[in-house]
Image (cartoon, rainbow, N blue to C red; front, side):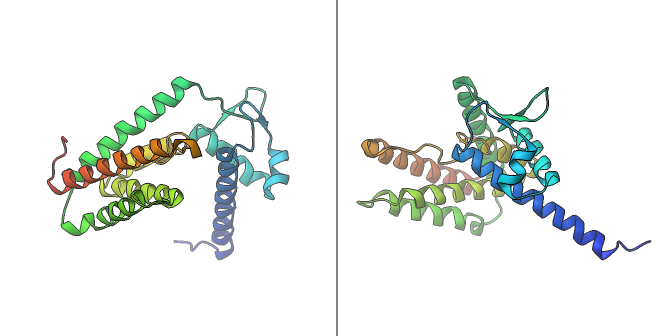
Length: 213
């Protein structure tokens, strides 16, 4: 069997890493709102903006269209997808259903108490943040995201994980997508407490192998 040329392998790895960098950079721009809804994006303009060559940019555009953040245009190029209120509610409902499946599978596939160590640690940290006088909301969102990622991992289902990652790539479907303004601190605190109670019930259900809760 012929051994692949090292230069060929290195070249393929470099191309893949360039594509990943372009995907990450462009996704961040889209989620940050750098482009308006319906705005047309072209390879040439993005090549200059991202500092990448055309091939990685092309792959990035196709990837983000597959994720649902962009739409391919019949005349060529891509546009930033417009989301309706129905899109938003449907996406949130689908994500909730997928997370319910993740919790059920995690309960069914629970192996040992150490499986829950990270989830318990995240709950403990969120509880401390939730009762602080000046809560660190950014950190709360980070820990909340980590809790959900660990739950998905405990489901031990690569197929389910791919589905969840696809739906949570949309800005309003990610864990912690709900952010409050300064005048809504009471509502923010209520959401924190509800989220924490929900997380505790998930941990208990997994420990009791109760996939129906």
